[in-house]
Image 1 (cartoon, each protein chain N blue to C red):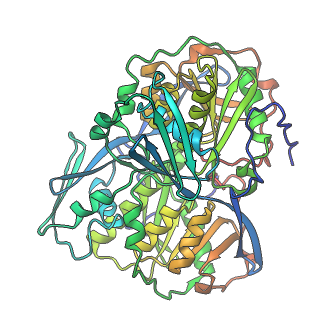
Image 2: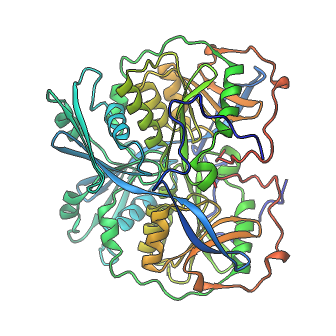
Image 3: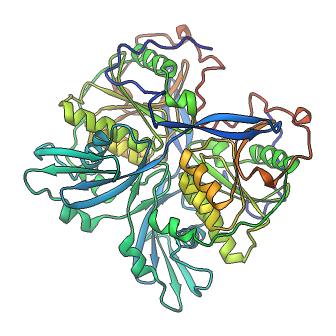
Amino acid sequence: MAKREDISDYIIAPDPDGAGLSTAVQGIDHDGKPQVINVVTERPLTIFLNSQEIVTAMTIGDHPKYLALGFLRNQGMLKDADDVLRVDYDDDLETVVVRTASKTTYEEKMKKKTRTSGCAVGTVFGDMMEGLEGVVLPDLKVKTSDLYALASKINRTPSLYLTAGAIHGTVLCHGARPMVYMEDVGRHNAVDKIAGWMLSEGVSAGDKVLYTTGRMTSEMVIKTAMMGIPVLASRSGFTAWGVEIARQVGLTLIGRMRGRRFICLSGEDRLLRDVDPADVADEPRKSGRKGAV
Amino acid sequence: MAKREDISDYIIAPDPDGAGLSTAVQGIDHDGKPQVINVVTERPLTIFLNSQEIVTAMTIGDHPKYLALGFLRNQGMLKDADDVLRVDYDDDLETVVVRTASKTTYEEKMKKKTRTSGCAVGTVFGDMMEGLEGVVLPDLKVKTSDLYALASKINRTPSLYLTAGAIHGTVLCHGARPMVYMEDVGRHNAVDKIAGWMLSEGVSAGDKVLYTTGRMTSEMVIKTAMMGIPVLASRSGFTAWGVEIARQVGLTLIGRMRGRRFICLSGEDRLLRDVDPADVADEPRKSGRKGAV
């Protein structure tokens, strides 16, 4: 077993033993023997913007307020300037209500909404592409030594993924430090929770790297750009449209990060190659991480 | 490299070299060397039921008519009895229009619709739970020797997953035979394409097994039950709600299928243990398949 990472450096780390985030379920294995395994929770959360019901997301249920704020922000329904008065979460009703002082433009937006389906999307698309107009991502330099350090730290961090599987993680990183590590049944929820945390805390985006365990689809690329983060890295793969959008908005896209290997399909100029990959340890076979290519 | 499977026994097999399904993209690897890799396509497809726009799905783009039919069927918007007059696909407009002779109940349904977000869901939920009322899944017996044979055949079948990654597969199986193998960026699209094919061809569901490379979330479980298929198997894991719904509707749920190992969390009574797992070859390390736990 690889050494587990010290998590004291995180602002928010995963909570693999968090109450309600996973459930022990009894089953029967290939040998016909009873086995108890941990499976992740999945529950609905309905997000309201003032009196308007916006969406029902399926989530593990932690950080509901960040999820609501981040979702609205990444959909372009909540602008930086919108004055959020308060955010109310009701556990019994499984709702979050985000209240703003002034009217938002969401009512007009709702008309244009298309519902999208499927794992690779799941949220509302038209607006998101619109929201990218005018996005300028800063000229950050990213050391490859930092990228390797991040991947190694994140893979060893205790997580729901390691205890229960069937979950995605997204990590906000600064230099070689993973700062906030969110997990959720949908990778989009995980990234929205990070966006909500950043909005709540007023955290800068231009000097950060976003790391995801999941695939870099068009929607993941759009959300990252909407957040103003110039670099998206993943141990998983790409879609063609994700690459195309990243190139259009000038987002650095690094995928298939495994041990010393990676491939950069967009924004290569941000990479500062300060380490010889031959000197980087390759991923141990039993890394605990599998992750779709 | 494991032996590649003969695909002549499939009715529909993946088309890894299919025009437009993947794109060669140039990037730069960890050593700074140019690399060309294949990435899967992702494009919008807007589905209409008569004159009503229903959804925009992100898809690799193959079998658009099956996707449209299956999506509408699995959402409960198209009943068995609905007389589909014709299905028109327009490649330029990226639309499919499904025309029925009589009015469907979709207009009423649309009012109740909630939009869901995130990888684990992505489609419309309220109706789907409603649609499960009255579903009775037949008392099929499934040989574990057939399950092992299916997993082995499917893993060796040439696929977009093996050439480009970042994609999910769903396979309709009968006994030890994988019949129809669909792939898509979202696992929900892959299962909807199978549902559309079954509807078009009038294929029985009660004697089939559905195999998916992805996680068995609540939505995957609901879709499988809506299709009337009594067994869902996967090399990936579970969510707690997926397990709960499977138990409620009496669906057999088999997960984490890797080599000789699996775990059954619901409907164990359908399994016919006709082979000793010790006699089953374990998965080779270089199986080509990784897949989230």
